[in-house]
Amino acid sequence: MNDKLKALLASSLLLGILLLTAGCSSLQIVHAADGATPQARMQQDLVTAISQRKSSIQLKFVGNKNATLKQEIKDVLEAAIRSDDYLHYIVKTYKYKAAIKGNSATIDFSFTYWESLAQTAEVRRQVASIIKRIVTPGMNDHQKVKTVHDWVVANLAYDTRLVSHSAYDGLIDGSTVCQGYALLTYEMMKQAGVPVRIAEGTSRGRAHTWNLVRIDGKWYHLDTTWNDPVPDAVGKVQYGYYNLTDAQIRVDHKWSASDGYPAASTDYGQVVSDLAKKGGSKAGFYRQLHGLMGYAYLEDSYTATNVSELTEQIRAAADNGESALVVRYTKGTTVTSDLKKAFNAQSGASRISYTLEDYTRTPANDKLLRITLHR
Image (cartoon, rainbow, N blue to C red; front, side):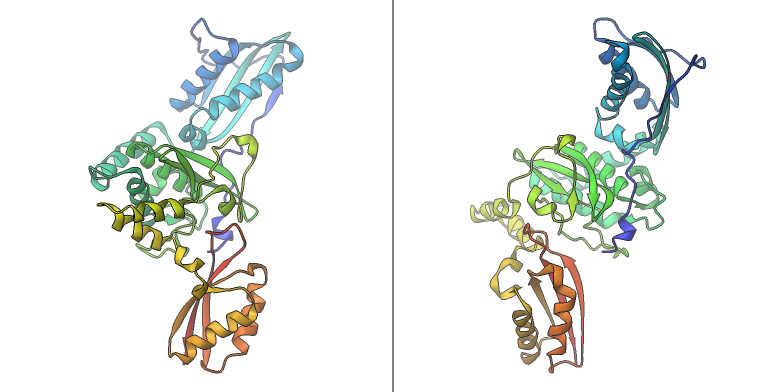
């Protein structure tokens, strides 16, 4: 996977600007309902304005005291934006300026968006149609999550231009960046009845967004962006970042504890394995899913822990006349140099090629090697 192509400055890193001025331009004033705190009233007015995709709004606010007023305004604005994950990630930028007198302020807010109100409505309309078609009666949440995940990965392509950022772009143009993947996954899971969140942080040092889904009361990380190959391979679906724990995905995803995301601590592979063993009408589905997630590569027959074991696995495959093999290599930090040593020790193939990907089912820096032997 090409890290550079996955780079994205997430829209949640909003550019709030507080300018203290002598006066404000005359904009529409939205009056809040009575009976709530000033903070709650302003937050609700901001949520309403963002939901309606207003480009500007003027609000009057009375805070606790002058010394904390600027921070109160910032906190209320951030709370409004974060009140709904979809709203949060379709806000492109904001800015605000305030005329402050004592503990009161008149504030002008301005917003830009990744999606218009009409575009969001079209996303919801299309998603409703897709969900009606792909989610069938009798599906449980395990099946719904896989169905939605597979549809998103199979039908979107990563926007290598880094221009398209929304779910609308993904549905209409077929291409978007991680933010659009996460937004579309969010809306589809939500309409399918699966509890879902959008998470943001970094992956390999670059801003990134992905999802969390809840199945049978347990939360898991789901990254439809990283499961989609780049360059795009039509219809190809990967499962390396499918329903991971915090420990598993932390190998290359980072986020702030202050964001308050639900903890993901349950090993989904064990859950699926246990469900398959119970039998029943869905046992075949669970067995297939367990295989797709690559848990077989934890077995000793697929594992090499050092250069000698890697060399021997390649030699054994060549001696047996095999043209390809898959190896989970546990020394991910030295995999490139170790591969070179292992290849140089071979005599049963005229040329050896390989692809390399992260193996996410352990909290270590394991790599999955797909090696081709050319004779």
